[in-house]
Image (cartoon, rainbow, N blue to C red):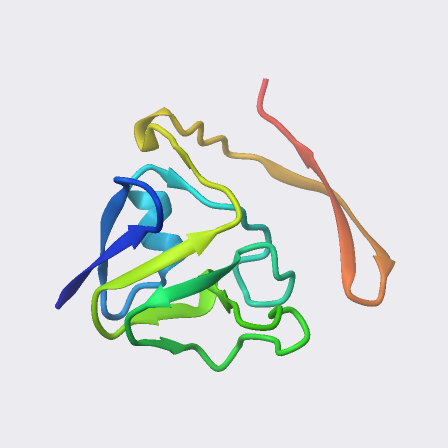
Length: 122
């Protein structure tokens, strides 16, 4: 089953399957929303859900979720939704650049942060 996700105060909308997160569906549809970790930790994808029922995956961090908002990387629709993200933009999903790289160095800079240095092919 698929639901329509609409961005408040705009004509933008996209489809989202019931087992898909709103963030993943938006990115797939060419709607760029703020995000970073995609695991419910950073809070960058927080947005208000203006209308519609949704479920939140159990991985979402309460500390990362601002009052009255939902992490879109952990939000799955149960019906059509209207969301109000802090910002958004249309993108071309086909224009994404994919590069295969090897990890050159992995340095732990804090207990929960690693710095990866990648080696790109010539």
